[in-house]
Length: 515
Image 1 (cartoon, helix red, strand yellow):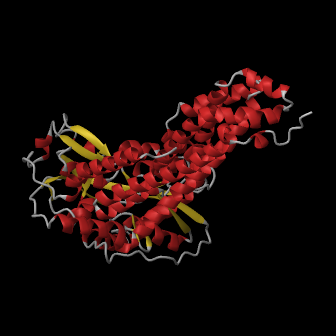
Image 2 (image 1 turned 90 degrees about the horizontal axis):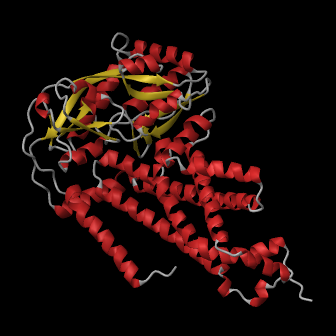
Image 3 (image 1 turned 135 degrees about the vertical axis):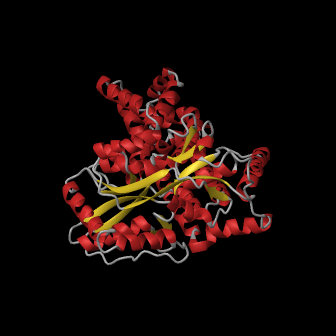
């Protein structure tokens, strides 16, 4: 497909428009909105942000029964929403607030506490559950406030005196005589769990590393979305899950340890606004924080590689499987056709993220297959279904007379299919094939729900560290554009090779004996 100058100009104009729309909100300092109140009850009827799965909204039900609750995946998304006045306030534990206070001085907590947050460890529903529950509770009792106080010292280090530039977790020292533990942490939430140049870091990581050293395990940290921790542990995919906020319902439904930390819940609003350091200075700082500090460009390179691996593998395998199934079904076998139609109905009727989570937590919940492999399986199934339907459309557009004519010329069944019918059908389904390739590239962005560090997930992790979204999001969008352009160009080259109008007579008659 030839890209005209007009299309290039339109694409460039679209990118400029995106930048123009997003730039002011992402780089300019936040401004103080008209005060919504100084007490929690003053926010009744207002819009309040909450991180999904934290249950903080249950603490303000009496004071704000008419409040509109908006749910966000990551804390930094709530900050952006507050700065752009999409919400009037948000709820966060004091630990999370103090971790962002230095970066966002415009934020201010109300003096009134919204409640007390208590966190526990969720124990995976597998054959290790009883032993791990006993060991984790022993660890908490031994090192908590009524023990040697080590957890209190860790809390002070990671929360009260937190410094992202100097705070570190001791790496290594795991004997592993009792095997490996798969541990789920939210990958982008300072100071609990985040990623720096040395690897996984934060209070939760420090907690499980110390536990594994003391009890002879080797930790395998999985960075997942917070709302995926509990389902993964319940399916047995994870042995431990960190930072589960306690509630009566959760305590009765899942296996939770004793409390390993607690803190106040703050309602955060916009406070005083400091003067901006200038547009260019803000741009420079944003760029350095996103790519230069701690070598974060390497994270983007790794994420782009994972995205490309999933995409290319799924396209190749999905094309082969879809083509193979079509070859089996084209003769009209009722059993095979029935199974194929049922599979198509099942996969096409299911949201992509739901399919991936079912594969990861249920179908392969018993195994140690990592999220990348499961993603390839899931997207291969999706693309195979699309390939089968594209072939059905393409061959449906060709009359039966083409096959009869090829037979009359001396072609056997396979020769008729590959030399006469397939090239003609390709003219009908190749445009659809290109669109499916682009769609698949975009759909891989949800693989982060099953602990895959693909490009979008890396963007989230970096934003979680910098609390600056502009360059992380724009650069991620550009990488997706480039991957789409490269793969569609390759598909276009294949399309040209099989175009019947561009094949010679000798090529068409190759292998055919004319009497």
